Image (cartoon, rainbow, N blue to C red):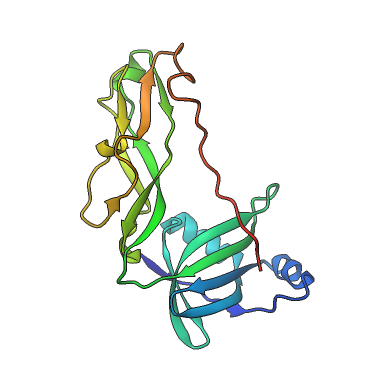
Length: 202
């Protein structure tokens, strides 16, 4: 899915300008990649947040830079630890006809028979890498665990197939398992859900 995002070019010095933008509800960001020079920009934080809630992180953001239409994907996001406010975003300009690889959330759907019989659902893989053209990237991949009994697991190979994209992550990697309460945290390694972090901003 492609969504238009209104952006403005910004100055990168002095550093206080970024704080001024944030105070005004703007998010400082940068765009680089395919067919575009590295360009510092800013945009409305509330509008950006709404687009993410409605469409997911793999949305194609279309913006105008120097009078040229640029299609981008979110590359990295930096948020404030205390307020969860967006501090800085990196956008990667992409070719809409070429395959690209991104991480996509894996969502477990349903209540497994194993959990109903007293087991505990332990998920240790929360995202997989998929390859697709930017407009075909999935927001998430759902997998039905209703018929997953106690002592069983699901792997990447069990995820539903879709002709729009290819799952790159090794098919043998375990996503989740239903274990007895005494086994929880030992058989799955107590893996935690990863958190998106930012990188050096400009």
